[in-house]
Image (cartoon, rainbow, N blue to C red):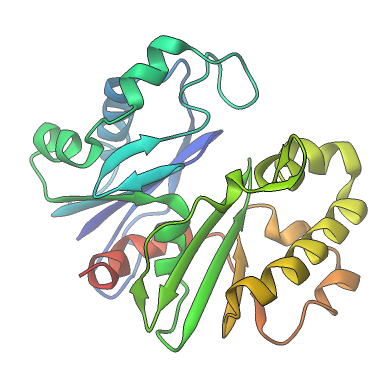
Length: 247
């Protein structure tokens, strides 16, 4: 039984699944609490777990560069009130280099796997054939790559510049979607896919995350047969499969 936690910039979602990926409780969600230190996130995860069935291990997906369970860098959580608010130098220092995987395991006394949230999301989607790329659209942009069903080293595509002073994270993130409206924002998604296709030469691209459902049908029709729009529930369902895909 796996406790699967999807940590986003705006909310934390959790459920418990068996080895077949069957939910044993409807996912529950709380707003992401700010200011958010590592200790406060661990406490929030424990509080969520108390409202769910028993579990034997934990999978956590969180934004940013996570390397072997250690936070190299993370967005949102280093800001005073979350996305697009003032950077807190004290929080930046607390998060940088924090071994989140060991800390959760020690606190809750369960084997724990901490990955980038797009990697957990992708684990719930890929079929293990060829090079599969996963993009998640939400507060910002998430990205992961799987080769033959195994997780490849993480790339923070969200930080790549699309033009001077603008990263992919900003260009297609929630703030820009609201400013542009879904139609113009959807055109940006099409342009992004066209730009990235020759870079990665994927066999299949999955587009997931909460905002994937906002891509307009006219854009969906021209994205190509190698592009799949995925359910946002993969961020929870991937919590089980992730353990096999990183081995």
